[in-house]
Length: 116
Length: 114
Image (cartoon, rainbow over all chains, first blue to last red):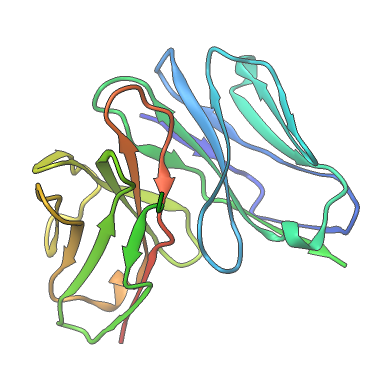
C-alpha cells in the first residue's frame, strides 16, 4: 500500500520568510512519481512539480525548490521569500508505476498562511 | 487546447435527489480519474476509467455511486439518493494513452447536499 504523510497541518509565516513543507512517503514500487499541488482559496488544483524516483536531482523554479531524498523517503518543498499569494493548501502526492497502480495517493495537505 | 472541463462548478441537491457530475477530458486524452475531497481533507481516489471501461473502482463507495466514460461524450459520475455526507468537491483528471507524464485536473465540482 502507498502512503503520503504531511505532518504539518498548518503553518503561518511572516511575508518574506522562507518556509519548508515536509512530505514523507511509503511505497513498495521501485519506480514511482512524486508530485506537489497547490490549492488556493479559489479551490482549483495547481500542478507544481512532478519528480521521477530515479531522478534525485533537486530542482529549483524561481522561489520554489524541492529536495528529494530517496534514502529518507522524503520530498520536501521550500518557498523562499514567501509572498501573500503563496497562501494556500499544498498537497504532496505519490503514484506508482506498475499497471493497475495509476491512481494518485495524496497527503492530507498543509495549510500555509503568509502574514503580510 | 482546452483543459479538463468539469460542469457544473457548483451543484446543490436536496437529500434523496440524484447528482450528475460531468467531466470532459483534454483533447486526445483517453483516461479519466475521479477524486473526492471532503471538507478539510485531502483528495481520495474514487475511480479510473478508459473509454467504455472501468479500470479501477477500488475507491468508489459500494452503493449509490457509479461512473461511466462512454465512447462519445463526457465521463459522468452519478450519485443516487444523495446524503449530507456526499457534500464535497469532486475533481476529475485526465491523461493520454501510452507513456504517462502526469494528470491534468479540472477545476472541480462542489456538491452541496441540503
